[in-house]
Length: 334
Ligand code: AFP
Image (tube, rainbow, N blue to C red; front, side, top):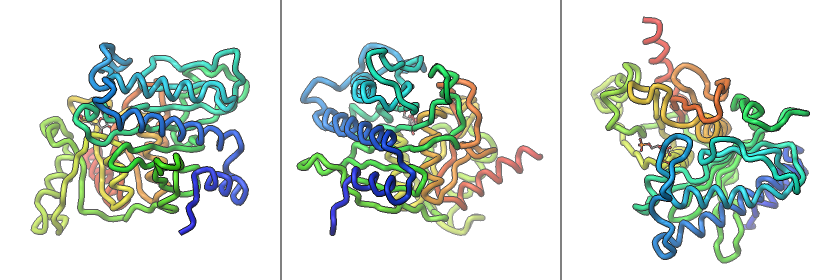
């Protein structure tokens, strides 16, 4: 089988489909190279003393792991000199990172969750990096306000999963492709040219320990799944919850499923961050034929008010997401 690299894929998207500019291609290649470095650091685990807490908190008040901080620094250093970015924003930084004056500035804004699934780092479970690309509005200082665009404005989105193999999932708005890292060559090899999510599923992903906090729509849906063949959905369901969004979403891209982290009595705004978790994942899921809502509206239509705002997330197999979203709408009317 002819091995197509990420670079060849991007050149094809640029040359044949005209949807990837030279600057966007450079941005994606630089982020992908940074993900290789992070994958390498993650794979060394306890050998290099990088496990455990960094002794600091992020803007969300969450304890930062050493690898959270390292991954953020790897991405900043890789991206700030290339001339493709106007600024960067990250889960690990309260304010956007401006491009130093000694470097040229570009047209794009990069948002990232440098290491998603931090609670899984020390127990050797798959974790990853999530990124989203927006255009910086013309003639605008790339401050927080410049980033506050709905997810429908994204020009690219992707994530890496540092698992048994290291996978990069990418969309530039023309479907979803998957690449596997060939560590010997140091190349991302195209292994899934066109990822498509099955419209139906019999597998749900949710943190069941939050059950007492859920609203009626989610409670109704999960109870129907648990009722199995004899229940209203007429089939048995399986459950998975990795607690690394990258791993759960990659599984759904591969075999279907529904992922839910809804707003609830404990997470009134939701738990997941809109700008650098929900938006990139929603673009990817929709580009793969799935759906992504916050229970009431398409996530990509949400107009952000704050850089680190949270949102309820229901995404995956289209028919299942539409069912749960329908329950939310029914409950709202009653
Ligand atoms: P951490 O990065 O703090 O581990 O959070 C991971 C995450 O943002 C997302 O990747 C998971 O789906 C979700 O949170 C797991 O949340 P719970 O730990 O409450 O199950």
